[in-house]
Image 1: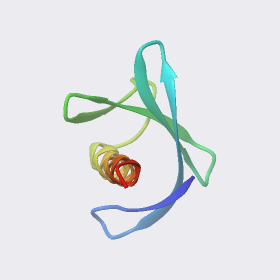
Image 2 (image 1 turned 60 degrees about the vertical axis):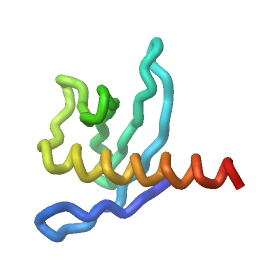
Image 3 (image 1 turned 90 degrees about the horizontal axis):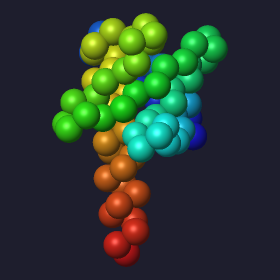
Amino acid sequence: MKYKIKLEDGTAHLVQISSAYFKSWHVWKIKFNDGKGAILFKLGSEWMQRNEDFLEAHVVYAIGACIDKIILKRSSLSFK
């Protein structure tokens, strides 16, 4: 699905977020409109990216916060 992410500098970006599993890790694939992509995963309460990815820390945190909201919404819907 596509989501609008607002960064600390006030800019908004449209990103596509999908989830997958890599070995035993739950990962989220992020794709930007310019074709670039990244893979994020959560280690404890900290959002991380692969070493090969290019995102700055504040972008990782913003996207991670969006994913946390998505997960929270999904879990609250499943209890209804």
